[in-house]
Every structure is written in C-alpha cells, then in structure tokens.
Length: 168
Image 1 (cartoon, rainbow, N blue to C red):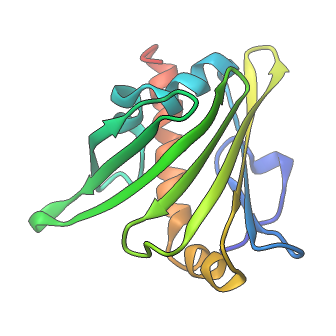
Image 2 (cartoon, rainbow, N blue to C red):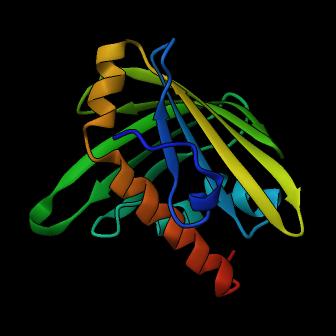
C-alpha cells in the first residue's frame, strides 16, 4: 500500500510511501507526544509489547537490549497458536534517532535497515519518520503488499491511547 504524504492525515493514519529511486519505504506519523515519549515507546520492551500492532496479535519479548550494538527479538502471537517472529540489531540509540535492522523471520533473507527519527514540532508534538531500506525492490514491494499498514496504524493508535491515558 502506498499513501500520499498528506500532512492533514498524519495524526490519524501513518503516511506510507514507496521510494521511487531506491528500495525503501517511508513512514510518517505525527503524535501528541514528546520525542522522549516516542523513544521510550520504541526502546522500553514492556511499553513496546503493549503497542506493537496489529491489535489482534500480542507480543512476547524474547530478547531486548536497546543500546548501540544491542539486539532484539519478539514473537507476535495470536489465536489458535499463531506465532511469527521478528528480530534485529540496534546500531544507534539516541534521544532523536534509532538505527536498527529489521527481519521478519518468515523472509529471513530480506533484512531492512531502519532509521527512525523523532522531530520535535513544539507544543508537545513530535513527527516520527521511519525509513526502511530493503534489500531489493521485490522485497520492498512484498512488505508493502503484506498488509503492514494495518499493524502500523493499529500500533500507532495504541501509542495515542497510551499517551491519552498517561501510560507513556
């Protein structure tokens, strides 16, 4: 799925775009949050497990070392014993930026390099920009056609709820 980069919709839904020149996916989303709150949502394993989408799946953290050179792995769980795993390595963890690898173990040869930036917009608002550089255009297109936007929108809506309830 590819959406337009429309600032008016960045609060309710993520804008997801395939880069036309390189095998990459851009994701933008604005939050009523500080950069520190969004960083915590991405590096605190207990918080991460509460929001990662889609909503019909749970997350079991198996490994989580959110520091430069650390690694992570979690299992998404669902009904009837459904499980699928994701893993990666944290290369950079800073207050305004995370650089990590991302692998869905269902496609173990397709590793993405992800850069997440947290831009302080002022007034307690932050723009998240995620850039996922994929191994190939085919791999990128497979991710885009996988339904990933459901997990992204569900997860980011969960962050919104956590923020509104003071849980983040």
